[in-house]
Image 1 (cartoon, one colour):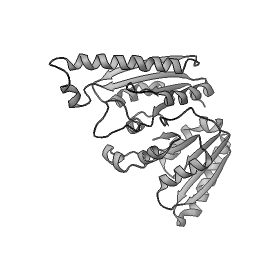
Image 2 (spheres, rainbow, N blue to C red):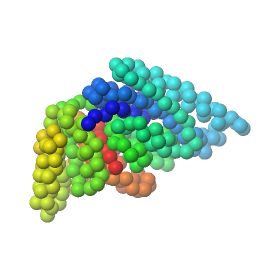
Image 3 (cartoon, rainbow, N blue to C red):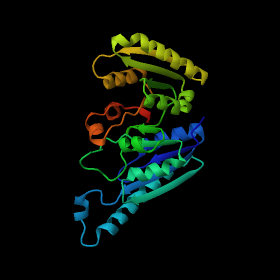
Length: 275
């Protein structure tokens, strides 16, 4: 198992340095082809449309996006100059940009995107946000914090829950887990569920071992916010990568209450999530 093709979701309106540092390290480890993609929805909000004169918005926005995308492509090619095979794709879309990226993701084994602290539900940028990608691409998504300087392969932390999403995420993460020097698995449960959790983690540890991953499995008793506890564990372990299921609801619910968004907003580590 490997990641032969990576798709990197570039922002055309700001630096992608952290994202590209992570993509570079993953590509170097797996010898991957890297496809960069920049997409933006045309007329993402009414205010932008009113900003141009009669009959001008379409061409104005196309021109501005083309300029920004060209800068992003230069950044992409410069940062990944050491990668043997690069491809670049760009598109301004009439529909949501994440839907376009989801279709393009048919060529990818892994999608890499930024955990965007500028994501604003009520003032969308027209570019694909991480929550939308998780819901739509049908591929594992490696979310990189903006301050990332790359992806180390020393320590991974698997956040286990007895859910389809988590099972999918761990299976998708196997190439990365095999590359790690140490893998820890933790499940956070109520005190009454400790015995069931130990049995589950025993099965999981055996399965991982058969796939070539020796994991240290442990159970934590839930005390307060699960996301806060998981973040603290990741910091204590100096984790390079967190693996978790993506729990996505309707967009407003995800924005206000979603577990995945809460985890990504707290975490200053790379997170691989699947749905």
